[in-house]
Length: 502
Image: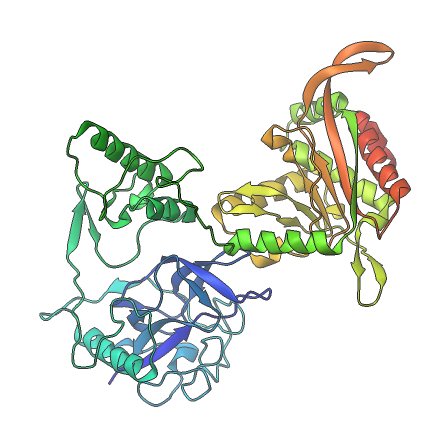
């Protein structure tokens, strides 16, 4: 008889207590291998693929895509038996149908099998397994609505859920042990392609999901134009446009929604004029909490200066003309920052409020603000003071791409000691940014634009940039902050000044 094991949302590290289900990677009835990713979740730090420590048949999934689950909540159940025996730690013995987190079911608080002594392959926090992942396969259905193993496992899952009062099982909530609903695996034709009714919708972006949800679009019936049928934002907007045109002309078009869809209202307004509530969760919630704490705890001040960046741009042009890897402007500004922090270490520090001490740090972990579809994130370049312009350019490019795809790890988003904020990419000249708590300062860089400037006693058109420094007034006074900012401006205007510190 198959043994049903419950896999719970593990501790994802960095003090995270919850995660949002973005995309299920397996369906009920799939056979999964040890360490195979089964669900993609979004935390306040990053997007994470969660591997399952068991090998067997998926019998139930807990939570729909878009649902938020606390750490320790059930994710899915796996039927483990002779026909689908897991390897490594997932083969821990126990009573049949055992489920729980108190040790009676061989599962610890993270959803890992107890008594694991082998090395770990896919490791998050507190659990892992040794065998490499394998490709999943569908269980061939038998007459009656599923395979023998799957049907038996579903019956076991429903009985256990009814006994424990667990809710949220995909497709089986509220069922009794006498009624086991068969899973409809018939495909639905959409735009010439087939897509199952149950299972994950090929959408990665939470923005696309929210847009479709707000307008009542059924994504399961919408064809995607991306790779492997991935549904993009443009697909949703095109469906809304076609539906709106049809509504205004009275023509009939194939329905892609379970509910009537009207033309989108003007940006920022709802169709009914009612207020809209947006939950502060995920990245947006984490940013809100951190910025609020910064404003509460840090007495910040801002100073700024205009600088002639013409020579810096020429120096970068000369570097790139010499061949080898191209140097980014952000990397040059980062190199200037690390040199300035070596001269003014007060700004590379943090305040220990309990000990009433200023902690000056011996390394520079440089954060830089990056705007993504998921919101504002601040990736961190480790040991930026020990990297040259080429190495900084490469690391900025790597972290920026990871930020755009949601692949940043929690470790790449924490531990910064100073932040460089290039808000000039938004076409603005200046800003007074909020310090990234618990850091002590942030350098802001506006757009570089041609402006009239007195150069060598004559009026000329030069490339001018505004630099601003927001600093924690507890770690230094205005003289130190002004000295730091003036040194940065001097390096921007005369890059040769950097040679003194190289």
